[in-house]
Structures are given as structure tokens and as C-alpha cells.
Amino acid sequence: MASRLVVSTFVSLDGVMQAPGGPGEDDSNDFQHSGWLPPHVDEGFGRIMGEQFDRADGMLLGRRSYDILASHWPGVPDEEGGAKINSMPKYVTTRTPMNAEWRNTQVLVGEAAQTVADLKRSTDGEILVQGSSDLIHSLQKAELVDEYRLLTFPVVLGQGKRLFAEGTAPAGLKLTGSTVTDAGVVYMTYEWAGKPSYGSVV
Image 1 (cartoon, rainbow, N blue to C red):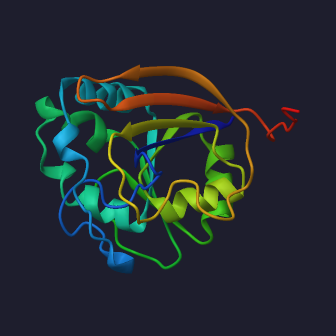
Image 2: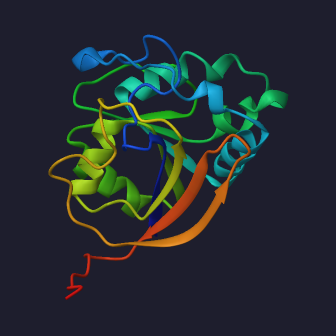
């Protein structure tokens, strides 16, 4: 028994993943660009996201991302996409105990790398990590990510939390698919391919 951990996230061309959804989502470190994703949402984007959630057997979130999604999805009707997300198992990592009212949520208390490693060993299927930059950085350092699904938006922000932050463990990735939406969002999937290879062009 073992599950695959899939990171699905939105990034700018300069690798920023902070506060894509709307104003005030995350203004830490004086971030000025919340809401950079919505102008590029179209039918192709919606189809990609729908397919991702259809494939997932569970969802893993950091505390902040959990609070954002839990304030929205419980009120979404089944026919508008709420059925799948509200019914699937959800796991939230936290260093301190919390009450989780969103149904089918399990709270993982402790250091993320250890609790998520235990989760991977005890579950089957595909666990989707949605957003959650701090959590993703912990998973990268512990080499727990099996696949990346990146939606890269045609914007440069110049500041903010990056997907691959300083100190991320070096990794080799294998491109397994790519497509472009009409709004210019590039969707790329990568699988973990071990340590990077090095060489010389001279």
C-alpha cells in the first residue's frame, strides 16, 4: 500500500505561487499582486482543473490553503463541482491541533514531512496537493513529491513565494505532458526522475 503525491499549483513565469485567487488572499512580506490568476481563467482552465479533481483520491492542504478552500467549497452545489471535492478525503497538516468542520477532513498534527510520509505509506491512490507553498517546500526537501502538475500563467510578478525556493532539494524531472489554453496558460506535467544529471557543453 502506498499513494502517489501530486503537487498541483499555479505559478507565474518567474515561479511565484503566492495569492493567485483574489485580493487579500496572502499579503505576507508585503505582497502586492493578489489575484493574478482570474483574468486567465477560461474553458480550457476549467477542464484541466476538473480532470485533476476527478483523478484524485484525496487532497492534502496546508493550514492556510485549507481555511481558504473550506470557506468556499462546502457551499458549492453538487452539480457545480462540489460533489467530488466535498466527498473526497481531505488531509490538513498543522503543527497545532485544530477543529476541521469541512466534512471528510483528517487533521495531521506534527512535522509535515513525517506526517505526510506516514500518510503515503498508509493510503492508496493519488493525493493531490493544492497550493500550500510552505507545505510543498517541506515535501520537496523530504523528496516526497512524485509528480508536478503546473499551470504557468503569462505574468511576471517580481516578488512573492516561489514554488522552488532557495534550499529545495535538487531534483531531476521528466516531462510527461503539456498543453496550452486559449488564454495562454501552459499546463505541464512532470514526474520525479531522481537526482539531476550534470554535464558540460564544452
